[in-house]
Structures are given as structure tokens and as C-alpha cells.
Amino acid sequence: MGTGKTNKRFLVAAAALTLAAAVSGCGKTEDGLGGGELAAIKESGKLVIATEGQWAPWTYHDESGELVGFDVEVARGIAEHIGVEAEFVEGEWDGLFAGLNSGRYDIIANGVEWTEERAEKYDFSTPYGYIRTSLIVSSDNEDIHSFEDLKGKITTNSIASTYEQIARSYGVADVLGVDTIDETINLVIAGRADATLNANVSFYDYLNVHPDAPIKEVAQTEDASRVVIPVRKEESDFLKAVDEAIDGMRKNGSLSEISRRYFGSDITEE
Image (cartoon, rainbow, N blue to C red; front, side, top):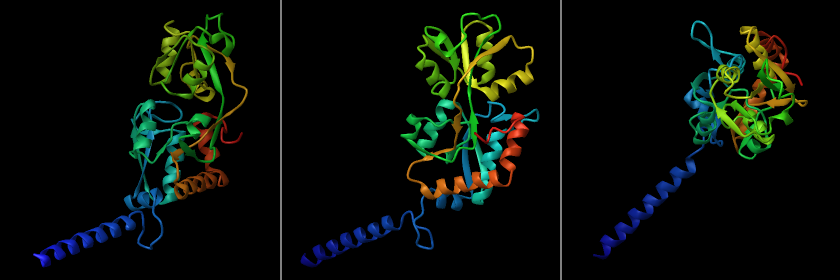
């Protein structure tokens, strides 16, 4: 009986040591260095990128159905720098950050603007774009001339977007949630919303495609917002790789070239 108890204790102790060794080995690469997300991405051979796919000219589908856009090409450049393939997963705006939180996505490439609130939850790349927010109303609207005039009005934007936050900061009565800039403009034209807020470059792109749209820009933010790539916190090696990729594209001129191709101007410099 005594021998049996000793063997059981030995087996339990051995199992504990084996489990401890396995746990301590987690997050290590073959060379013994700490792993983390960058190592996992390299091992998988792909960078999983979250994007809406319906916000031209940032991320959208061309006439052939191919996913294209400024952010799409920037994200591909980041993947190329890391040495992996770019895998895009499309979804609605308010679900992109949830997917990043859960580890479903590695990065979000969707014209994400830096905000203090987001900085509490995520780390950000070096800025790769600078934009201002346009206030857009119907052509016959004579009630709204500034952001201050939004108080008590109804706006329309993607839920949880920077634009919704700005609108609410000016005391709007309600924000109608939509997924695309086309939907926001249509609600304004139809009179269901008094105004919409969006990136100035996206508004100009919309007008290029719809020059006769009965809408107008009545105001624009003075300070430029910084467009960044959000990553989960405590991933310094991965963030460094993302920054190196963006800096490399800036230095070789490709970042500016991509911007001019999609926006008709260089938004990569403040």
C-alpha cells in the first residue's frame, strides 16, 4: 500500500513538472527568444487585416469586384515588410475593434483616427495620413452653418465612429447608424437626417463620382486628425515592424504615390 501511494505522488509531481515546462515554453520561438504576435504572424504566414470594404477611397471594391483602396495598399505594404501574405476580412465598422480585441484580426486598416479614448485600449502606429472632418448638409439647408448648429439636430454616421463622437459632442438629438458613406448621403438628401460628418477626402471622392448630388460642405475641423493602424497593447515588436513598414513606404515615396492615386493629393504629410 505504501509503495502505491509513493508512485501516485511521483506521477502527480512529474505531471506538474511537465505542465510547468510546457507553459514556460509558450511564447518562445525556436531560437529561445520571446515570441508574441509578430512571431505568431510570421509562423502563420499571413497578416489578418480587418476592413469595411465599402468606404471609398480608403477600402472598397472596384468594378471588377476586387478589394482596393488606400488602406488596402498600405496594409499590403505592411504585410510585405513582415514577409507574409495579406489576408483581408471585411466587416461592419462597429465590429472591427471587437475582432481586434478577441485576436481574430491582427490590425485594422480603415482610416482609423487617433483619439484619447482609443489610446487607452490600443497602441497605434506612426500616423500615415492626416485628414479633417467635413460637415455635410443638403444643398437647400440654411439652418446648419457650423458644428455648433448641430445641437438638437439628427446626424447619420457609422456607429462608434469618430464622426458619431464629434456629432454627439455638439449635442445632436440623435445619430442614425449606417454602414457606408452612400447611405449617409442618401439619408441627408432624403431629409431623414439633417447632416452627416465624414472625412473631407471621402466627401470629395463622393462628389467626384456624384458631381450633381444636392449636398454641400458647410464646415470643416481646423485641426487635422491622425490616421493610424491600431494594434493590441503590449505588442512592441509587432508595432515596431508596422512602424518600420510605414516609414519605409514614406521614405521610398510609395506612400505618397498611393495617396495621390486614390485621393488626388498627398494626405500623408501633416
